[in-house]
Length: 193
Image (cartoon, rainbow, N blue to C red):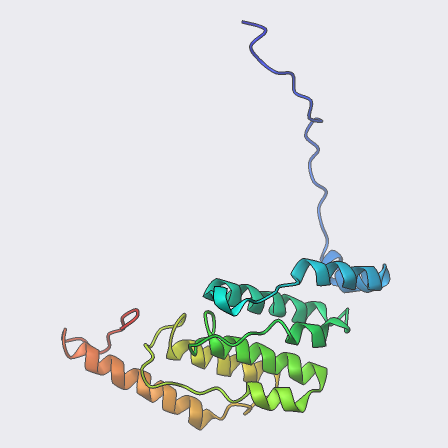
């Protein structure tokens, strides 16, 4: 029976040392201190995505938007990636924040603002809201409102006016009251209604 086991070749457990708050604040300094051109090259290779219109997928869009969001924060240290990250944004078909056009356009507008590209900024701020959207966060009007809030936070107050956002809120409440009449409750929400 003694020969039915493997000897443990891993080193013994070493407990972690405690981290301090200064560790997180030192991260941008550390990123900008060592090898900025090498970091840029490596990050470019890691996040390089090629889009094939024949293989269109919403997952690719979410990945490209996520990559651009990561690059937005990274470009505070590595400024050369800002214009390159604008190229990652591809416009999908639906208006939503997380899984569609409004989020991608909002992120593109913030990136264009930081890059100083007014033409791209105005292009990304032209988000059209179709009337056939559901009222949910992932695929609907609430996602559009999230994108508007994101723009107002990162570009400046009143980038998207309160009256435009209020019209969307009123539409959501009106639609949900209509749905609630079927089941006799004050408000009713449904997913992909």
